[in-house]
Length: 279
Image (cartoon, rainbow, N blue to C red; front, side, top):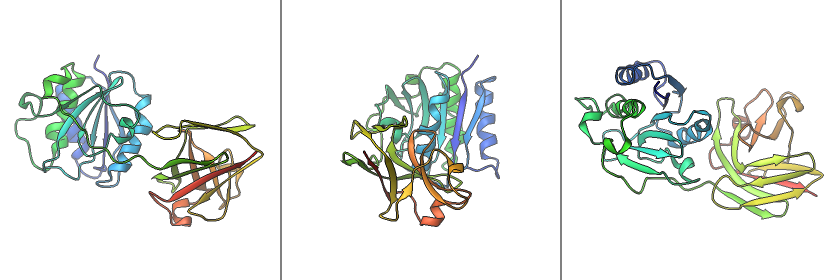
């Protein structure tokens, strides 16, 4: 049985792009499960796609193939590539969309997708998702070795890591790295663990390695604004009240109960945030 092929794109579902990509994949690897991670990445938003890939990849079984098409440079000199990283395969444009994974460790092997046998016969300049990426992903799922798809590629493009800094024994500074559809602000501060008596930080990106601080109270400041309380979940705050909490990925998040923190605070990617605790 073929491993799953997971698709992450900015195509939306109003047009035929996603269906055609999956039809191509099914013709090459019939029976492979086709899983839609998301097709609602804002058009051309590489950082958004990179975060959603980081957020979702670990839940897929070993051998899964990820086809990522957030590709504002389609048809230009940017490279189409495929990579083996940990237990999975990734097929994507070399534009930084694997950045959050590569912050943790480098790929085991990377190739440039140039072998004609593993793409469609007629390759357009505007739809590499159909003509290059989906065929390559399906061939990998069907058992074709990665190195058969093309020559080795080095120096994958990545964007700089987000800010994560221990300012003092009770203060951590970071930034907003993702805004979800509810307007919740997901920050770079994590991984965080709260056992009821102390707050622990185990960094998920290069930088500070660890912090463990007993506390009696903790609060968050967004871009130097008023302090926000830290709660366990949305329902612990009044309707319309802003709060911070440790999200499902163990990153610090900021929300407004039944509202949009992004709108209320006019905040977005790169907005500075800090977490404070008193022991």
